[in-house]
Length: 165
View 1 (cartoon, rainbow, N blue to C red):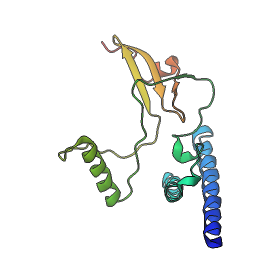
View 2 (cartoon, one colour):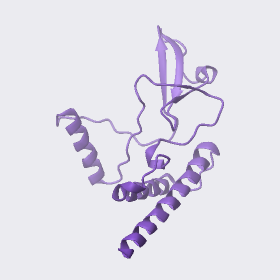
View 3 (spheres, rainbow, N blue to C red):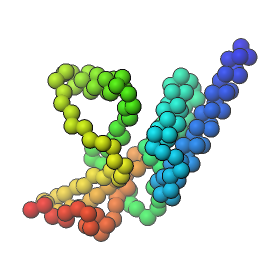
């Protein structure tokens, strides 16, 4: 029994360490724009945390990085709710991961004849543009919470067409 308690205590300590490290790296990447580790090293930390939490679901907390997307938003932006959620895509690092992904999609769609368009991953901002009657009325990014950050219309005008005639 004491071995199980020690094991759970060790796992809880490792989970706490991973959560702290991930929070630090999220802050450096998303707020300071000064990452200190590679994307693959960050993904490895997150995968380890996901594995430990899946093996010890009683240690999952609402504030765990596995339970949210990205980091808190720097202030100054209004919040909006997307009509259709913007979901984060999962990572695949091996042929087996890719096969599992394809199987999950096929199962969800109930079909096997699936075609894909694949591009290299490019880090950046994922946004949703809403045009009404051909006019850009809202640009909103994904955020760490259910609400989404509404980006400045003025900033978007520099990068996206204001009208689609």
